Length: 483
Image (cartoon, rainbow, N blue to C red):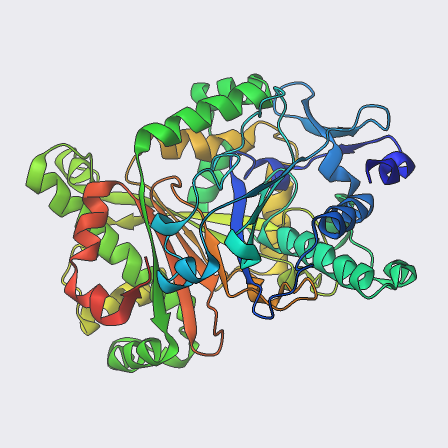
């Protein structure tokens, strides 16, 4: 099927600061499909591969070479005579789908080596960073299929990732129905990096001070990261994450629990109706994690935590909140395969976050966090982009800061697109899962299997800190651990 790629033309795509600021990480998920009808041709290997290749034709950036061009500049070079072919592999397992299902798709029940790359961008066996990695795993007795898809953040954020995976499933459906001529009627996927620039308004609003400081202040470590090649940078980031030895868990929070929480803080928040589910989860998880860091420090003295900040008289904890901004820029109807993420970095009082987890103090935290989302308008986004575009090495500065301030937290504000809609024509997935391990101090909201019932919350922390979170009574009343 690779001969289909002969039609790809050579081109060079200059990546922007929005692409490179998340380039250290991959976006990896695993989709579980059950062969409930015992179909002998269930998710046929040849058809899956052909539909994937046809998807690449529409997103040729996924066979490009990630190359450095001076300090901080990164480009994707698509060479029609030397394509950077994806690591696409297929294997079989003696594990039955029913066994995975019975264990709730817990990581412990997975076959070995599902992940063909780690959580951070890194070069593979060929010595190249692959934009996308695929692993198809056929389960015992043709009972089902696991589909592992990992895409480097250089290429897209979770919305861009979903656009590609959805297109793969759409093309597979058309081939399955023997109507390949309809592929040409599918909406175009947009990889032109000028798309965001063209969507910016003329008006500007100032970037908040801590974000500006982080992206513009000189850092020798950041300049070093920007100077080295993407491959070396990826290698270092992967080593750092491996040494963190993160413990990850997936939780579920029902909308009923969030509504109850919202009602309980109502008398302590000026307009509780404007408090979103993400606002609530951000305030609650940040508060609980900071307290867990403090307890870990007091308990064994091994994990550097918030008390280290207090001991040095620094009562401020860095918090990066990452927003997906397509809607805010009027791009909701554009199938943009790229990055449209804007981080806001703030300093929050570690002392205030250590107040008891009660309705009163949680309400105060929600109010204190209110400034994070209220001014995230198109003019603000435009100012952020203006700030990073003339500073190609600025993308390494948040990384350098968050490496050196080990208690700094990252919260992904927007819910991921609904991955349970990915239907290859043989039924929707029974389960979709992130991988583990991941980098520490990250909280991300994922679409639940029943999107009308609640949300899933993926949290990755140092093991000692995670132990305290798991023992937190307030969190256990709000959240249910999945695995």
